Image 1 (cartoon, rainbow, N blue to C red):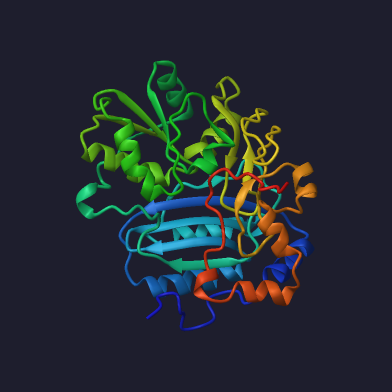
Image 2 (cartoon, helix red, strand yellow):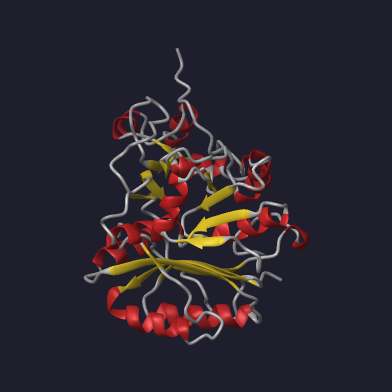
Length: 348
């Protein structure tokens, strides 16, 4: 049985285009917020339905994952319903007083529909219960404490995927060349070999991946593990509240919504994957069969028709019927590149 097959219509049946059109007509502001909590949950189907009904009534948009181990949510809430939303979240004893991370840059178009899905884990990590104890996690550091630890020579590790860290990171951070959190955990453990007694600092977007990583590293003998409280999002919020704090983050913070990034500093630390000019704008390849997320400057977007390769340019030049045919059949289901850096295969 599909756990996401609801007893009612617990999903939005409109197309993306229809949802975006409705969003464009809105005359009010939205608040983009994320939060997570590791806590044992039961009756997930009923909880999913209850959350969907209430949040849909409040006009909430976003992507929420529920699992036996907790909740992971990225949302866009109408500003005029913000207090009602907070009140609703706190009405559940297991979610009460959960810290919220408010977006740094927010044009109100971070999400275009509401989806709440039941997963095995709120973040896929591939770990067994013997690999960590989530009750034994690292210290949570404020922005000030984080900066002080960096100044004192601590080892900084980026717990995000490489396509996130390529557009923004803390200076001199270790940035594993991986595409998934599941792949990253053992890689980080190996990279830190010999530093079991040294101070290790972990950071990610909002803190959720670091929570599991700190427990994992402590389980494997790392004695002095700390994580950035609230992740990059809350780090910037603290910087904005205290102008005396130095910003040690360079570039953009990658976000998993329609914005794809929030600018934290003026530094552009990455380059277009096709011409190598400075660029930190992620786009999706226009070929629906590919949909590769990659860096492409405005000039290359125009020159290469928003595509990542010659093969994809050829596909988008086909008729709609021909493109649909290409998407049918098991052999065509994975007609895309990995997230690794691409080079446009220009022909002689």
